[in-house]
Amino acid sequence: MKIKVAIIGGGAAGMMAAIVAARNGAEVCIYEKSNRLGKKILATGNGRCNYTNVNTSVNDYHGNNLSFIEEVINSFDINSTLDFFEGLGIYPRIEENGKVYPYSLQASSVLDNLRYELSRYNIKEITEHKVKSLRKNKAGFDIITDNGIFSTDKVIISTGGKAGLQYGCTGDGYELAKGLGHKIIRQFPALVQLKLDADYLKKISGVKFDGAASCFSDSDLIRREDGEILFTDYGISGPPILQISREAINLIYDKKKAYVIVDMFPEFNKNELFEILSKRFAKQKDKTLEESFNGLINKKLIPVILSLANIKIDDKLAGAQDKCNKLNKKNIYSIINVLKEWKIEVVGHNDWQQAQTTAGGVCVDEIDSKTMESKKEKGLYFAGEVLDVDGDCGGFNLQWAWSSGYLAGYSASASV
Ligand SMILES: Cc1cc2nc3c(=O)[nH]c(=O)nc-3n(C[C@H](O)[C@H](O)[C@H](O)COP(=O)(O)OP(=O)(O)OC[C@H]3O[C@@H](n4cnc5c(N)ncnc54)[C@H](O)[C@@H]3O)c2cc1C
Image 1 (cartoon, helix red, strand yellow):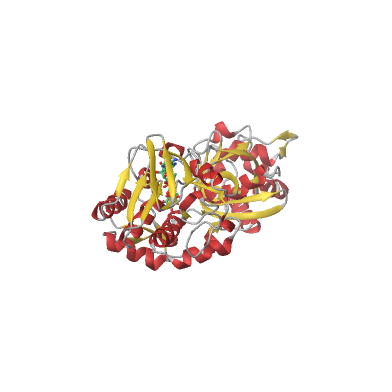
Image 2: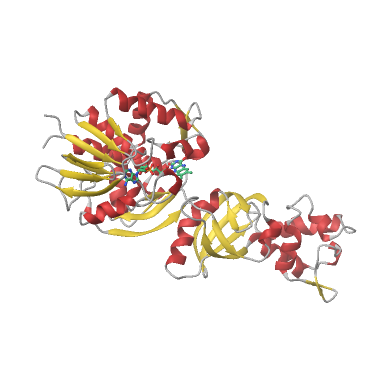
């Protein structure tokens, strides 16, 4: 008799687990609450699906137990992932910082090929069935859905976290796990835009530039990232902001102050920038400050930066219409301090709908890293974002889904 494996949640981790379990001889059924499997995959990587990263290491992940994460990603590593997807038909395209996309640059090709494999192995997809609870029975588990009760030998919970609510992720897996005795770690959104406390945001909304953003707690640097930064009417966005958002939000949830410090000129130190600005002002003596900064920074930023620099010309706060030849060395350094260390308090974040991943989740200390089986309930397994594991931007979250999904699918289908 074939082992019956039920997979709760047909996202990335669930589909990987299903394919592996079916290839290993199990009878596999996926229970999915929405009307289709893998909806979120279509949105990944801006529709291109950054499905892994050739530079993946444990340093790209967060959670309360990093050695657990390391063991899992080493068990089904990048080469295994690339081989698995090439086997499905996905030829890799490696882009900047080791990010891997399907050569077609279409997320739909990843989903199509996964679904093709599900049907090749006759994996049952039971959609529009929300699993409400799991109950231990003599042989395995009862799966209680809003559309009937089913039974199975083994269960894999792969319901995702709370990020991307619009793709069906509402944190149901935490309740399912809790119901079977598991500890859940506090969740908060990660890889998400930050809300800032500043009255000038509407004036500079839409301004983009390449720079560096750091997350600071009072005076301690927590993390710095480079890349395109975008001011919005509520705060700040862009890849470096998403990367540092986890650290900033964690501080706020711990009731500590969090700041973003923006460096608009990361390639120059303050003295080099002083040289550049003083030469510029000397050459353009007759121009106003607004005119002389034009071509160096976005025009919308000039009045805001001058106001933050808080310098005085002729006993008045300097404005965009003052002549640049009136600035002294101290004034120029005050402007440079803003250009290189623009400090703004973080007061919040966008909601789960905008977040790309979930920090926190099912505590991994109660799970076996070799098999993904619960240490509390035999026959129960976990995979994917539902666990207390989250990765940075760059393909690491999907890699976690593949690695943990592979292990869970393989072990759940192994005969006892
Ligand atoms: C916009 C966006 C872009 C992203 N881009 C990338 C990227 O390029 N690279 C990367 O590595 N990561 C990316 N991520 C993160 C990545 O998509 C997720 O970490 C990954 O999909 C998690 O996989 P999962 O299978 O654990 O959960 P999910 O993919 O979230 O799947 C969970 C599934 O479970 C179902 N479900 C939930 N509750 C129940 C229930 N009670 N009963 C039945 N079914 C249920 C859900 O409907 C869903 O289909 C992105 C995320 C978002 C939101």
